[in-house]
Image (cartoon, rainbow over all chains, first blue to last red; front, side):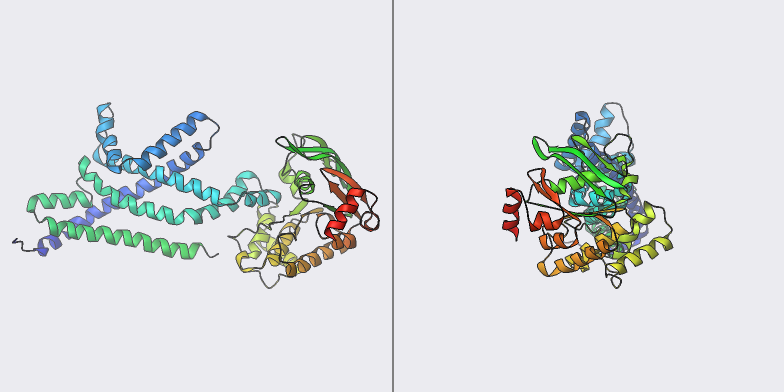
Length: 220
Length: 241
């Protein structure tokens, strides 16, 4: 057991790793924006009067929540590849994580919607508001509060999931950069420890700013 | 100017809760509706402003058929205020915002106008000091008075009250009844579904006794509450007084 830690090597690589962290954030943010969009579609689909929509939405949600995220990303890269749809590493990773986010968020939104009592809608309509107006002004803001923290969790989860991009050949995100540095130097412990700290700080930053935002947004 | 209810039937699935009710409420009148739980009186109220569809019959508000296909319910509801048993405050808005919202978004009033209306209505129900407070910080009675102010802010021609004191602690009932007394003294047309028999007797021009989806007796309070003719009315009044 002779291993001499050489932290300097890792610290020297810090600028490269931080650039990688930016790519990581990019994937995470995009996957959340797209994920929220698809989650709304899924949440609406699951209460659709058409069986096909309900079935499709249920299948998506079930698969996203009950299979490993790694497989979902694999499917986007190799799976789609084998049926002729060739995605690059970045879009494949993005598609995989978006798929996963949408599945979880759809359930979050469905629950959030149920948490707002139907009497709120009724009270709003009784004042002469139309259905869309009542939803936007009365139901949505209350629902947003309910889904806010679960959404924050999913954002953190999305950031951590981006590290799976390395298995579909992504080499410019934080994990990709770290892995490259690792194979060149075999300073595994140092590089991955520093990368872990960066992931930790990003995740912390997200939860802290969410808490701050919640404090500003939800005064009631 | 009146609310005309003509042979209205209303079912939930196989259960018929309103079985042919006919009555007219003239402008300026206060009509109380009393009767046991499940007698269909609250349901009828929901039918008047179209929150619930009906199965047959007609309801005319100032001559407009509420349940006709072409009726703009959003527009009709502007002149029918309703206050619910569960006051249904909007929890994410302050007391002032709760009352300002509909005048702004439905009537298209400016912010200043809506605020002036809201402040006036809230002061009227005794909540002038609570403008910036969120509903969760109010008592049940205060929330219910806020709900009354919220409905009044639309300057309705009619006010419907659906057992508005039933969910309140006994010591908070008085303040809400006082607010309603004030409204009736100002000439507001009101249909009041209530279990407060003494209140009904005091403020109403007429009292309707509901039993199993039908009106069994209707008339001045001195008659329906003071000297009921029907055995069902006698039995009901005995059970609540």
